[in-house]
Image 1 (tube, rainbow, N blue to C red):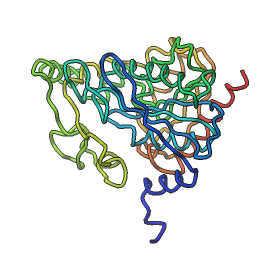
Image 2 (tube, one colour):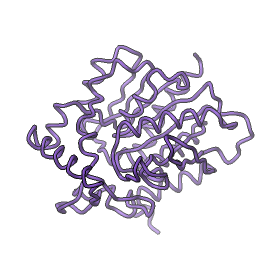
Image 3 (tube, rainbow, N blue to C red):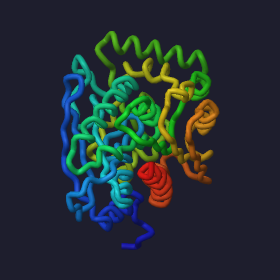
Amino acid sequence: MNPTKLSAAAILMASAAAADVETRTVTFENEGATLSGTLYLPEAFDGTPLPAVVVTGAWTSVQEQMPANYAREMVERGFAAFTFDFRGWGKSGDLPNGVRFVESPEAKTSDIAKAFEVLATLPEVDATQINGLGICASAGYMVDAVAGNPLVKRVGLVAPWLQNSEIVEAVYGGAEGVAGLIEVSQTAEKAGGQIIPAAGPEGAEGVLMPIGGYYYEADRGAIPEYDNQWNNAGWEGWLTYHPADNPQRLDKPLAIVHSDSAAIPQGVRSFLEGFAGDASMQWLEDVTQFDFYDNPEDVERAADTVAAHFRAGEQS
């Protein structure tokens, strides 16, 4: 096979194999539901507890997508890594009342906080050296989950989607568009939910992301494990969630990797303007949001940055 024809996902899988990563399933409970997680370790793990990273991904994602890519990269750099499916997604149990596929910042933040608690109990993990890595939409959830959390040393954000009301209106059709989606959300919630496809080809109707690309391509994010579902009842919680407005809540050293060619870089700038803590920022040129998910060169560069940030915490 011509190596230039290999997909980004195939290249990352080959890289993971070279890194000799082993995994084991870890299930845990949160708010009455069972969540499915995966612990990533070096294949040659000798029993000495390792510094660790909880890795979370973009909206609608499951752990086998971009979280798995970054978990393998963290293992290659000497960490244990932990991914999981949020409640209502993938192999994890439902949200209250049997609800699934709702992008709930509140619920996902709670799940991340519980994941830190679980990780700290595992014998493979050095409980004094636990970090958080949030990608895209889960960046805000990660910040919320680590803020004031004594279990967590440092946080890294890759291609973070940090929105405020101004960004929400710019992305979702102005004040009128946002109001319309909130009405859709309230109607769907009263009906017990309204499920639509999450991903579709460019221009598709009735789809959350009618843009093709990562979530639609089978050799990238459209893997068998991906739910490819969106519950319209989640719109209100998502649109009224404004993590860019609350940087002061974060009390952990922070590293961010982003690009002006990726999604809403203005949200990162707004967040950093209000953040008074220890922060480092790496801007990469010409890297798209989806590139950060699975393009090997960009994933590796981002992983190098956050791993170095986490390692610096081992000296403190």
